[in-house]
Length: 357
Ligand code: GDP
Image (cartoon, rainbow, N blue to C red; front, side, top):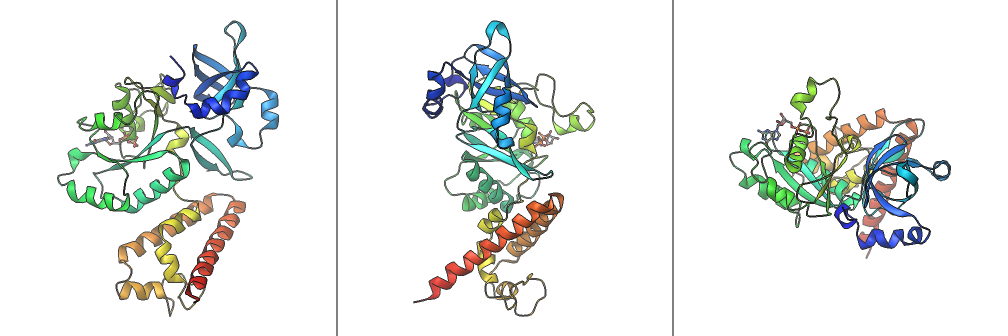
């Protein structure tokens, strides 16, 4: 196994160089168990651990190695545990917020090159959700690819592909069936040797089945099995960073599966800027766009400037955010509100200035 086989590129080479001069070697994190790691390197698989000094110097959870990270290690003497000295600058990352005393971000997948945004064609396709996943993908730095799974259950694909193309110009859209295996090769083709992929999508869309198809064996348990399986989601052979038969790499971590779509008002603003702008002309500043008099959002629906389903999606999302916020600690809730207020006032400022001659 060479380093490029594991995803090593000139980017990592450049950030690793100072560590190389000090005698460290690079390795990639394949699994994380609390403070212990399984690493892949040129010499094969290794156990790794961070030093006390590393822990002391870490400012937050996101400073610790995550699955997919490249780390600088001290080669173990006589087959022992490798000591992890540093995390090499990440090229991309997916993080989730962990609610506790303080809400802190934790990286759940690092250095994925491609992220497959999976939807299931057994349900009505949710364009708004795809838009939101695209935002998450772009924030991560990974290249998004839209996967429309379960084509075996969808008699008329054309209009759906057209609808998705309209909101994702320039993004590859891959219809496939993980069950009949039609289209699996097109998905696998995005993960050529040394390229790392990750799957993102709601529960039940077929991520596990797709992962099994890509790996070429029943490595992961699908939901049907999982429901009756008290031992948890994964089989014992599970690795969170897997090398695929065609040389690509796939990251599948429990944290990645739990990524909450919303919780970030900025993403809401990005997707619903049209509504935020209409709201500028509501009579009341704190208009909820329900039954308030002088509501410009409601007026826009009446006169056709705003599609009713877009308004419904906005309201639904607002509820989702409120729900997430309740689950998070109050500190974060305050931050979210402040951020939302700031965004709204910035939009106001921008548009007020634009109106001036
Ligand atoms: P996950 O929650 O995203 O990991 O979804 P799973 O892979 O566990 O799949 C959820 C359910 O959808 C299971 O019952 C799968 O057998 C089923 N499924 C997955 N892919 C397909 C597909 O292409 N066609 C059909 N008909 N069912 C599928």
